[in-house]
Image 1: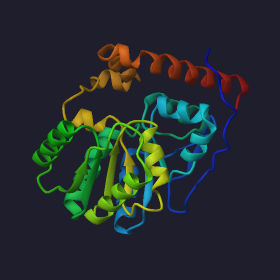
Image 2: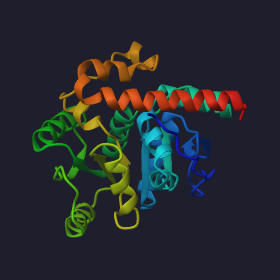
Image 3: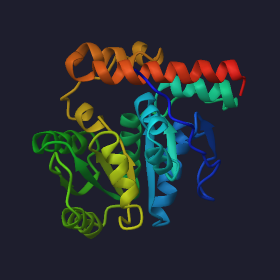
Image 4: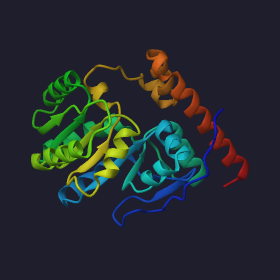
Length: 266
């Protein structure tokens, strides 16, 4: 049976230089268009100001709502962009946010890479398998020739020891990267980013399946499905055995939260 956790108090604005957040079912979601998100990330990069950024879809929002500890963690993020179309719809309905577009993590990753290439900033890739990383690096450097990739690694698919985490932090910092892309899945990547927010000097961007998409290992939904909030259905059709439970639970909880807020009128 699907249960809803008590709402987690959401800050309206966690840091002075970040876009304002609105409370969406107890979780602070940033009111920012895609261009604003990329601009803010690059401002942090050039100011050498470490920050943690998430691209929040329904699955990540519901995970934060149902787990109070994770909810508090997510409310600590400097920027939690509206990744999913249902998230954008909810923000516009309940907060009159006026968001014209969602901030899709895989697209934001490419846009930041293009800005980094143009502005002389190197990046670090953390996540995926060795094969995925090799293809991802090949594709990124082919499409963005001036992009500097100062390091990459495929972490073990298990919990890391404190020593392993410290070693990864050292490698990332020693690389001199201004942006560290985390592609180790939700909520693992968000937990890592939050734990290392005071140790990793780069801007950490949690981009989920973007590594797989840009490496060509997983196909993306066609634009018409993305525009209608049906990306989850496309991915479910492609990987039913792995994803059916995730989408059945998280989509049901999101709908329940949405309807409850409509009934309450606030």
